[in-house]
Length: 375
Image 1 (cartoon, helix red, strand yellow):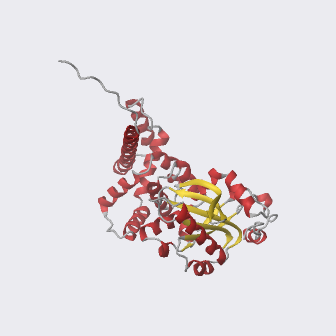
Image 2 (cartoon, helix red, strand yellow):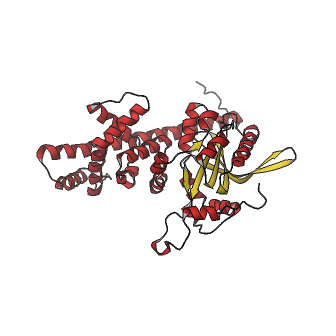
Image 3 (cartoon, rainbow, N blue to C red):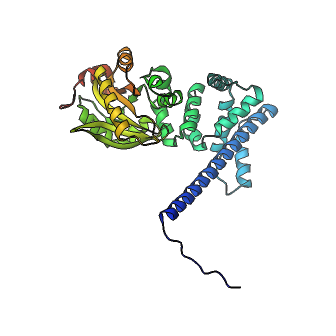
């Protein structure tokens, strides 16, 4: 039987699209497989930790059982990583920390706060077991297990799971006390008035009430352009402080309207909210006119640069200090979503420098200098 003549597929746009779709499917499958492996590994570590704790209670075994379990598992699975004595100790701690009454009570409060009915007894333990399995083990071993406060640990755990924080991002968030700032400090914005509820919640989680810019090493008065230069030179550190999801677009981003041109200090794109995020830097305190200027910029971004599937652009004004009541009045009439946050510089001084450098408030007073040429 004669074989059909072979034909050559033309390298067309349709073929390239087809191949790109296949590549995306391969990447998706690999990510799903990696997540499945991570999920099962965490469940395994939970079960090992729980088994050790329960047997210690049942038989009165001492802590030496941890070393014995590690040695036996290493002998049984010589090529498998993760069964070192140190890691087995972490598994025991992992189970104990997430099974303590304070942590379980906090989980119940969070579930009920979200409008759901919280499980009890063994069902609650199973719910926690599944929840902790959404975060890779390295995040626990190098970060989460060191967070003693149950409420703080749950906050970091849920944020890591929801936003996909890398290990470095998580460690940075813990280091700069993101939980304490999120819970104890009031955020000032008009997101609920300017955005749908589900987007307003995401934008609220994206915005911090204050930003720690100690990494800039500023100890004297600066102008806005110098502050901008410092942030760009330490962009990686600034992105870590902003949180997961921000992608840098550019500085002094130019927008033309008629015969005039305008410049946005820093422009980012947030991958999860799918919106442009404009930052304006103010070395002095917040002034009501800053909100009007940002509202104008956001109108331009929405009309000229917002993608067809993008959400409305968001503005964040970073200033040395702010009065929450003044901010509330300034934002009340603005249709675009705008947040105002203060930043801190060199808040922790070495012992040898205490009393020799100005306080945070004094520094804020000193640096109330507008950049030359800017309104």
